[in-house]
Length: 115
Image 1 (cartoon, rainbow, N blue to C red):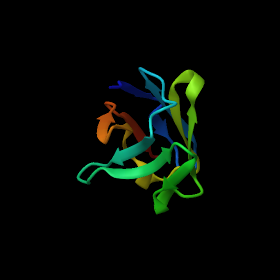
Image 2: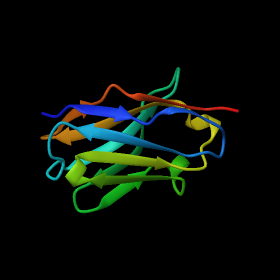
Image 3: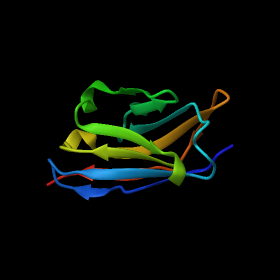
Image 4: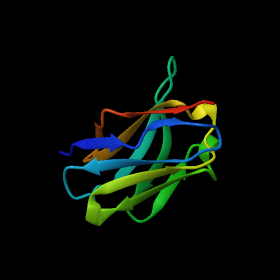
């Protein structure tokens, strides 16, 4: 099991940047997959970025070149660096971990991109 706590969301203007953090309650060295998802009002939750052991990462097409996922094992934290934010990036962002084929979720952090 793992508990996940997101932070770093907020209100930012278009073109701005934010860094989201996901703090885990246990070591993340052995967690195969960790990632970020988002859900905008009236829409389904969608994958934003995902990182697996071995360094494989994948991103939604809409965020490629703007967002970067990374892990810091010593801090038990996964980050999502978001640059050149757009209004369509507005959503609640959720951290995800897959352990033994079971999905664990944080409670989410709100990101609002607006002028």
